Image 1 (cartoon, rainbow, N blue to C red):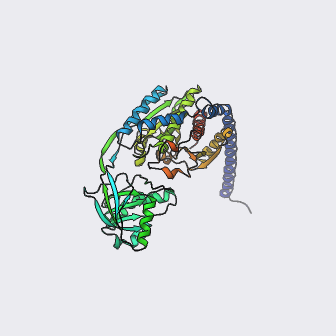
Image 2 (cartoon, rainbow, N blue to C red; image 1 turned 120 degrees about the vertical axis):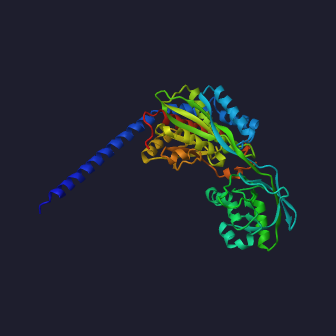
Length: 470
């Protein structure tokens, strides 16, 4: 049977496409092999970075810098004098470190002050309750709020018992599952309680472990819903009230909160660079956030991430290296309120998105590192896999999925490859947003390793002949 002309043309077209795809695949494979060879050529440079950071003259430097900083400045909540002192401190320190283009980029950030706060269970017996008001919460009347408590373990239970909640203080005793799942109670707890007529909400701290320590954080009032005071209580007190309630015991609590939300404050993102030698307009960002909550020292969240990012530029400078692309340090502000400073930075710089090679953020502690998390195209992932092999001298070579970081999320959503440190966070939420976030949590050996990884990845990606595919 003869084929029609149309059928013949279709077959020829399919054959052509198959050949073209095969040739493109072969070219892609050849290109990847070439890039593998290029990356492997950085073996000695990577060893030099590792030796300086982990064993050499820069050993423990990021830890010691961080200790001096947090011991001097303290915690650094958005809008506070402490945060502005921290920014001035870092601006001077980066200049003294002889980094290039040290600058402050203006932003507007939230300014919430917790004021004096206290809570006491007055029935069935008197007991002081340790609390931390949640960011953005309204305060109580001057005389406080005294009301009966209803204890629930979930939003579903709250809604089932809505009729019982009116005029009461809702206590959430939700179990910790993961931070991402459980933090919804901190974020939405006040508004969900207000919807059923509650006068305040007290939320079991979003923590996997507690020694009677409350953990704060930001919360989000829902538009059109009455704003009621909200705070976190300790795991121990939430469980105590849950046990009392399960026996049918009436619980009454008095709550005082002097929280005030002021107009947005003027502040800055802090920036420094090592300018690229060949493609200075193309940029690799290394970053952490300088703000913290108003408890502890903010050493873990995110002093460690900010300071290993600074250390990456210091190590590159100390070794006399100059990558082809610019490596830009950004110390974000207003991260704890949802990446406020980073959002404004993105709006200002997104016109340059085609030149943004890789965005990196360290914001999950600097405990024992396990590898790098990466978000990007498979072709970019293949290159990053080769880069991680350069860290074989410290046996930390794994590349994981899904880079994480509030401040770099704006870029990643727009298609820019992203990277974050993955470390052993099994104890991270023991200290997160609490008085326990101090230098005692930090370990200089782990910080050295995190710094080595961060620096090798930033430098090699910035020095490759081509940008990462996107």
